[in-house]
Length: 504
Ligand code: BGC
Image (cartoon, rainbow, N blue to C red; front, top):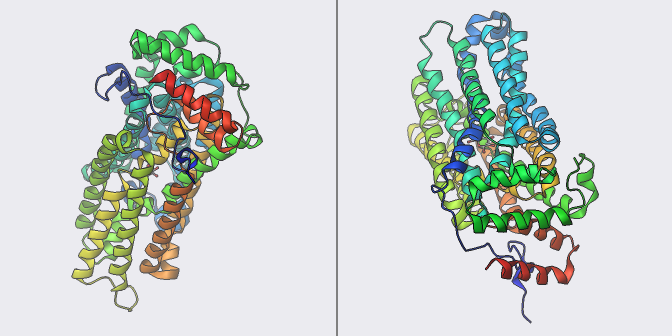
């Protein structure tokens, strides 16, 4: 019996990526400029989620009410994540209805208002309001930037370009730690820490005015000549015709083309449900494997590991954040070569091993209350932490964002991307809110063991459900879901080969 490999989970079916006239990552300055500008959204995402841990120390000094009330502290921290949930959910729809450009501009306005409100906040409630504004901006940016980049990107470098936005996120987190360290002696500390985020938002707002709307969105909304004018900046004439033909073909076949779909439409068709399940699952697993316990609580974990000096704890977190950014660069280099699946699977295997090391190190903790690790075990915990980031950052960091930017059909890209980003933010919220309580309940060792268990489930999820989308056009990816949903049956293979034949 012969096995048709195209039907296996990891296969993209009979579809193969086009191999001719490949554009390299650095060769297209227009797309790189667009990616960097859109990536300012990622920078703000990273900065605004990273800055609060340091700023909070000084907010507590200024507002006695905050210092005395841990619920108020938690609200200040988590309000941005709550805002991001709302922003991601609504931002998906804004993306589809009004376009990627307007969604980005809207996020910038919210970033600017929020940063300003926080900077001048006379009391904790106004500060919380500012965090909410910024959070909604982060949520909208988290959906918009990947989609906008993916839609302008040539398929052979799409993964790397979307991962560049993730580099901006990790870079933003690193920057926020640096700012936290450097503003400690400046009068008004936290006001500056939170207020400076308005600057990149103003820069992005101005640059975006000069950038075009996404060509794919324009085409879907029947603004074909405008779409072609944008594509002309990206492709040479041969390739341009190929891209236009594919767009025309896709919009002829897509009954939803031109319409703005609703959230409920996602549930109506089997292939969209399958795609959403895969995208949202990846987003949930990104969070439930514990990345943000490391990003938000790194100094605490370092102190739990026995390094009581605040300075050392902050320095080690800075190193971890820098490693995260460097690891993302490796992800950018690999994602279009090894593919999304392999990168995620290797990443999860390493994450699993690192979590076991962390768990083992914390099992060496003396049983007395509040005891920290001895120096050997403490260093072992640091090794676990460093390995965790080294494995997470090239794979499970960028892959969920890249996959979500490319697996949905045009009409659903905003709505589905937004819904799965909301899943990411809700999962983020749950993990961040419960980490310390779970440590209290089952111990540090048990907590890392739970994350290790989740990483095994995540590995199986990727193995079974995530298709390889490396180098495929959006139209080819769409065909994968139709095949899986049984909508295309046998003729799909023929169609796929036909497609392949067309492009080879
Ligand atoms: C995640 C964030 C996380 C960051 C860490 C991103 O891909 O979505 O939640 O804080 O990676 O680097």
